[in-house]
Structure formats: C-alpha cells, structure tokens
Length: 416
Ligand SMILES: *Cc1c(COP(=O)(O)O)cnc(C)c1O
Ligand SMILES: [Zn+2]
Image 1 (spheres, rainbow, N blue to C red):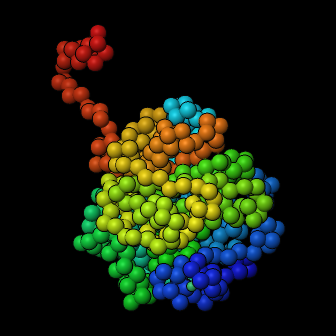
Image 2: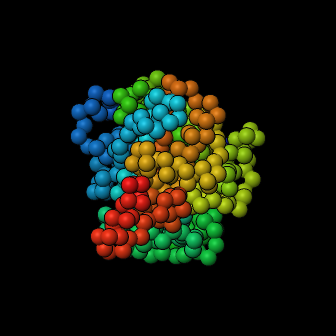
Image 3: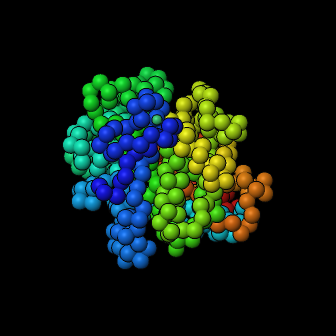
C-alpha cells in the first residue's frame, strides 16, 4: 500500500504508520478519529480522468488506487457504488431551480449508502486476517455489513437498539448475522460494541471509530463529480446523523481537488432532523464541542444523540462554506412524498431528509436558480414501511369483487 502515507489524528495532528494503530489516536481514546493520508502525486500516475473514462468497472472499485486497500486485495463480489444520478427537472421546477440531480443510494445492494463503507471495511478486515467483524447501528450500517459479509462467507456480530425497524433486522437475520438487540439507545449500543471489540478482538466496523469507513463513503463524491463530467456541483445536500457520510464526501472532494480532477469544492450542506440536531447547534455556536441530546425523530438512521464523527462533519461544512439546516419530521414526510412522485425515488425518512432541506432552502430563497445542486438519497423506502405509510396521505380504496361495485367506484373516483 505504497499510496497510503499514514493515518493522521484530526484532534492533535499526530501521524501514524498504517500498521501502527488499528482505529483511533491512542492519545485521545475513542475521540481521536484518524484520517487516511495519501501520496497524491503517486496516485495521480495510477488514476487519471482519461483512464476512468475507459474503465468498465462500474463499482466503487474503479477508484481503488484512491482507496486504503492493497492493489491486489480481493474485493467483495457485490456491486457496490456507481448508483444513478438522476436529473430531476420536475422537482427542480417546483423549487424554482434549473439544475438539480438526485443520487439514489437506495440502489445499493443492501439498499443504503452504508454499503460503500462496509465494502472497504470488509476488505481491510480480510487484509488483516480478521474473521469476526462487529458493528453497532440503528440498522443500515449493520444490515449493510451483514450483506457484504455474506458475500464473502463471513457472519458478523451486530448490536442494534431494540427499536431498530423490522425490515433492517430482517435483513440482518437473513444474511446470517448474530444480532444483539440492546435494550437502550443507539449510543448505548455503540459503546457496548466498542467494549466488545476491545474485549474479544473483533474487527470494528464502527462509524468514525474505524478510519477506513469514511474512505468508502467518499466514493459517492467521486462518482458525483465523474457523473457530472468532472464539473463539480455548487452544492451537495446530505442528511447527517453521526456525520461520517458528510465527512467522507468532504474527503472525496479534497482528493479530487488534490489530483486536479475538479477545480473547486462544492458547498456541503448538512441536513439534520430538528429532534436530532447536535451538529447543527455546534455549527451555529461556532464550536467543535457538542452538547449531547436525547434524540427524537422518526428518521431512525439519523437519530443520534452523540455524533461520533463530529470533527470531520463540522469542518466539512465550515471549510466548504456550506451550512447546517434542520427540518421537522413533517417536512421529512412531505419530502418522501415529493421525491417519490416527482422523481420516482422511494426513500426512507433519513434518505429523504436532504431533499427536505433543499425544499426549505429554496422556499427561503437561499439557493439561486442557476445553482447546480445534488441531493443525496441515502436509503431506500422499503427499509421502513411504517415510515412510508406515515408519509402518504393517500389510502387504498376498498372494492367489493363485483362489476357493479367496480362501476360505482370508478364513477366516484373519476367523478363520472
Ligand atoms: C447512516 C445514515 C445516514 C447518516 O449518516 P452519518 O454518517 O451517520 O451522518 C443517513 N441516511 C441513512 C439512510 C443512513 O443509513
Ligand atoms: Zn491525537
């Protein structure tokens, strides 16, 4: 892995060789999040825009020279990444915008953005010869890890809060994971999982804590820029819980800037649910210190009281000139409806949250009509059917199985 120079602590700047530490900077306990440092001149000789334009590998592995894995490491067989970027003209019209794209990461193999991170995490675990992988999750990181593990014949140990939506738990069980349902919050499940990883030596696929996961997450930013012909958008909107996705996007954009593939950074816009807005408040107060909350939002994937990747998440927004924005659960439900009807993208609540943020900003006149805007949809609506049913005001029409009833009902429906 000659293209990886080391790991750098986001708190104190200390640098480590890649085989020196597993996860975090030893000087700060679990707080010392590390960032992977690359040799860009070397990578620039291996990865070019021209080379990519010929590359038929339509997965995150087209960017392998820019990922923290050895060039010859086997990768999971699942098709992770290269999700569609839809131009959404009808939605743009309703918002007074002209250039809007929706990137649908509900189209990943396990139906959430998390597959990008799990895929890189599993390759790292295999490079290290680790057989047991563990994660704590509100659902998607876990079901994703379980799916990617199943693709290579591993069975992870998963900590979920007992309140995780059933569809996500069903995925876990079906993929063959062992599932521990913690009778408490996601934050408690997270701490228990870290304790277990230390106690038993299991490989930790925990957000922020494991520095390789944000490297997987950054591939979404690489794809967005490549799909837009290397003309970076003006803004990328994304929902934020722990802050790992937005931190990852920032990393990907900085990589592309360092390689000269793009010439400026888009503004990163972090959208949080009002009831789980720790990073929004820290951003507003101009601090990197957070005040934990007891989160309340129906968007379970971003229901986070202690955002684990806070430093990267706050710097991503500050250093790109972006903003944090909050939206209510009502606005999230409306966004699910509008995304589904206006662009045929079926999102889970956290998946639609970024779009809810765009609606709010557009209505307040805070986005100019000509701006090029990308909204990232992070998870599929089938993940949370209860949430989807709340989002639709429509109801099914009961029908007796007779032609007479059919005629009467159609007459009523169509006003005949
Ligand atoms: C995990 C997740 C998020 C939030 O990502 P963070 O890295 O925690 O900010 C958003 N949406 C979905 C669907 C997710 O699974
Ligand atoms: Zn440190």
